[in-house]
Image 1: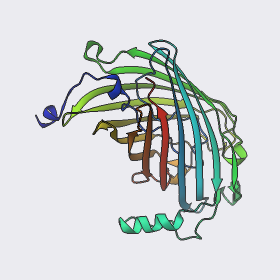
Image 2: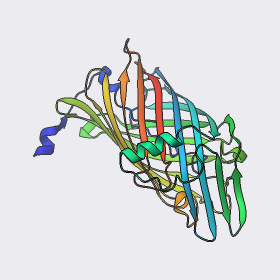
Image 3: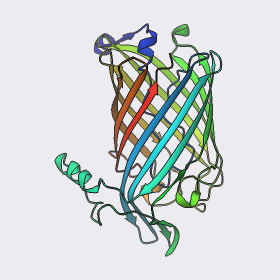
Image 4: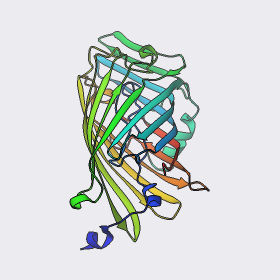
Length: 328
């Protein structure tokens, strides 16, 4: 009864549709972000003849280390991702897209700040005992170093091309919007610098989005599941798996005319066959943020924070910023 009172069906306007998206995050663990996992999206497509673009920036701080006697891992430093994405409505039911990232790995500047942040909120700093603001990515097995990187790098990441097909329009037959999304990631980034995997990856996912009201304000709820087929990559090829399952949930609640709150959860199965949980276990990424409509109603600014509350395979701390047009 309480849920029924809080959530009711909602006819929406074009302005409210602007606040239907989530944060376009991916798992940015240095050894996992090289693969073609699609960014978090909804089932709603860009309108016929319209073009949506988005410029995003992610600052990701790494602080993980593990050694089980036979395998050793070190993740220390910061990564920066500058991404440009474009979605075009080719028809009412078909959308085409492109995502182009620039990737940088560096020493970083936030270690001391994050340690203080964790202290304030009672979080552990057990994996932050080494020198502050240094870059070091390492994976070794049985004394053999399979990958190491200690010098900062910057370069183009792997280009991703995508298409989406709307299977069910919002509200049709009382069903939510349902879309099939597929993407192909091309090896345009340098695998030696962890800017790409050195292989082509294919993703296929099913997405659903519905609209409700929460305390008389519109809220969008989306869910998705999919499979990512990994090509024969050059980053730790001996332990790389051939396929990864992924899924997630997200909500975008328009709490005022120009402001929305976003909560989302993304899950992936393991990418590597190793006993070290930091790159060999399932990933659970939780993020909270919001979206603000800038004056003029044509641009929206998104912001979010990611913490590794549930999984060792997600970055220790990440901040997301992006700006996009409304597409209307």
